[in-house]
Image (cartoon, rainbow, N blue to C red; front, top):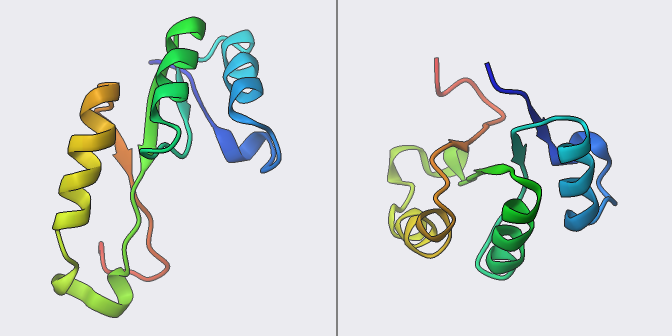
Length: 100
């Protein structure tokens, strides 16, 4: 088993560099945090510096759109963010019970 920390559980005002440092000091192997095209390079450098694997999330309007959720934005996210960071775990959540 590998220990990981979810960034927002440390507090929403903790900047990414401090979150990475705290996760590494706590002995975590993974940090689940928001990663996008704007902070991708910073996240990659910090993760390497602290020896962390990154986990991130993906959201969409599942309730509003159901099966009609467009796939193009997720494909772009995979290509532009996940692949360059070698992220292989992507979480999602929904406020309803579609996944049941």
